[in-house]
View 1 (cartoon, helix red, strand yellow):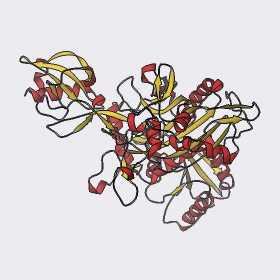
View 2: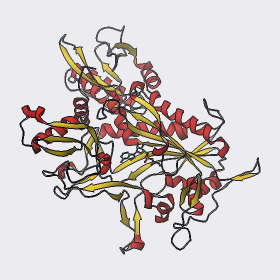
View 3: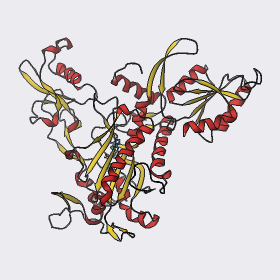
View 4: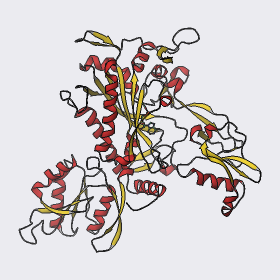
Length: 548
Ligand code: GAP
């Protein structure tokens, strides 16, 4: 990869995504809608392949009789698809109604709203006036603060050394005074309100009447669908603990500051699995899923140098969690040494099943107890249904513990896109040096598996043979047929789309140069650009082997 800055790299990636049809802004012709994105023809294939690889690893290719490497013992896996709008009581007992919020601040001058913990700033002084200059940036905060301070103090860029800095860039959350804070889009200091809670759930109404009774929520996570269906799955599919229930689907969060392309959005897709096990084995299973989920990204080609598995500090844990580790990726928009979360693997204990049985739980010392309302009754009562599990062999009844690997499909797609993006200088077919942009996707997730190219489009025999080859491959994989332009340009177009193989049908193929290479084609590999001749009879087998 040629040397380019992270910002430049991210700009190139965003531009390629739009130009080549990976990702578009939602409702773009109307000016777009913040925090919402659409997938184009290449993006949708990539996302489907990633989701399929996840589903395959978690559910369909999982053979319950075989003990997987490192697993404490064999286990079963099943899938479900639950509704996006669930009973409002689900969110009350789960804690989302009371606790799923971010702190926000409003700017009285710009009328903008910010997530409190996303604002960065520094104390900067000039001519006896000291102001806490803030910004929201994914890039170099110091650079942005300097720019804003110069503007505020009405100084030209060449007088940047006249600014006196008091300390480093810090979070707004770490200062107490607000009077001298210059908000991210304000011209004068002191315009920010005190931080307030903002619930992230989108509200809607069920039925024709709009009242508090008809209020419902778009789910902020898919996980609750698995908990409320625990009894149904146990009773209907004869699964035995330990087992997992997996689901992929849309979730919605009214993020205050959606940002970083598709990293933080308001509508996104999750790939979650709830694994139910005996409490005495839960720590082992937590370790197993923590390591296995990290390996999934590595096996699909993510560069290990950019991936970490980070254990949460005690204070970082969610209200229910006994232990959590995140799989994180060094996105180009992250500052040096920082990472963005792709997936959390949480040990949730018996919090969820107990909450849906007994009522919303709160921690009291090291105990989880049902939260009481002012009337001394459970504040948010559970369903009262029996969500325990009876182990017939051991003759034991218990509330299973849950291990939850929760991944975001869109963040995973973005990580694969960022990781795949590469530029290299090559000598082209005419002997000239040019820059090649290549998306080095693992063949299993690549949106298009093979490009089929007749050498010339005005030679009917070549075109007919190429069509035949397309018909041979198309039932088994995504094929892109392209007959326009010089062959080198056609290769380059597919390199940008991340297509791992190209098949060229030339005069040898149709026997115009004798019988030696008749019925063979050129197979070109995207990464090495190496070409070899293969028999048409062997082509499908070779490609199937390579892409699976
Ligand atoms: N059930 C647990 C749960 O939902 P989470 O960490 O809030 O945990 C899981 O979400 C994953 O969903 C995250 O690791 C991330 O990949 C994805 N995700 C969460 N919020 C998102 C957002 N606003 N935009 C895109 N992806 C998001």
